Length: 80
Image 1 (tube, rainbow, N blue to C red):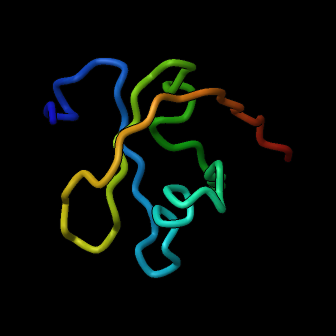
Image 2 (image 1 turned 180 degrees about the vertical axis):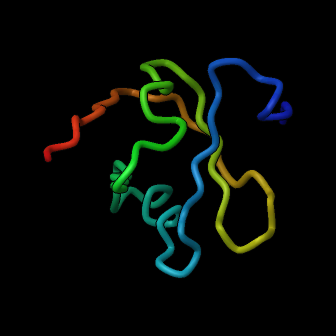
Image 3 (image 1 turned 45 degrees about the vertical axis):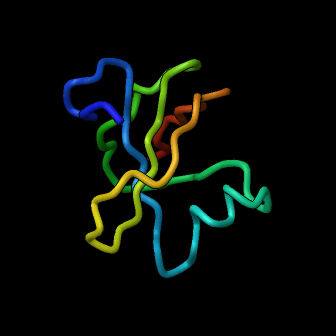
């Protein structure tokens, strides 16, 4: 697999190992991940349709577990 930092139009998605987010996606019981935060964080506004996303778990393995192509993106605005 290519180095994620060097690859353009590629992002990594850190999945929660404890709740088995990646397993849910791979087995088809989940089709999207929704993230919320008080402040916008990278890669907010930087992921587009057809981009490649690499999935890793947040359990310090650091190993790429899956790869996918982005089908759609929705960046919501923050309501104050």
